[in-house]
Length: 215
Image (cartoon, rainbow, N blue to C red; front, side, top):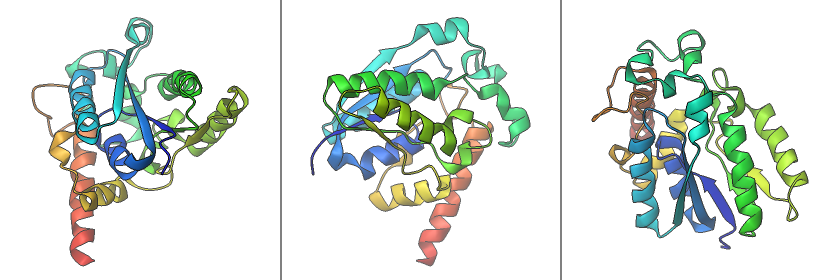
């Protein structure tokens, strides 16, 4: 299979699963350091998996996001809500138009490197909270990227309409060790287990294992 794809890789569960599932077509992984509480933890694992798979990996700094944007992801561990993952208490974790900014940069890199596709690991569980993960956003961004690049780069988002449980099931089937990924928005020495992303992660893994036991 031709390696003609760039992946936006955070080092979290979803994009790491996509990295492994589509590794045969991925030529380049691009990560962004935008000053979030957990960036350093995520990027460590992003680099680890790219080295393991022999995929070129670059990290681009976006310091202006922390300087000019407001989000609990940028404001320290204590700013992260501890309640369930719902719209009311997780709205604070939105980084305005983060995926739009990252995809615009990724589109330029893909065109420069003569790559045909960009992959993003948004999923159905993100839709309520994050506007730049919704189907209408990725569809519009795909049209904009194609129109704005000489080689008509396309955006691929195969997880858009599946759950995090299904992503975890795919990853476990592929043999991914999810201890080598990072989800916790607090970014401490260990994943806290109490913030909403930690809870979502554990629930997805539990449900995925239950599904696999029934297969």
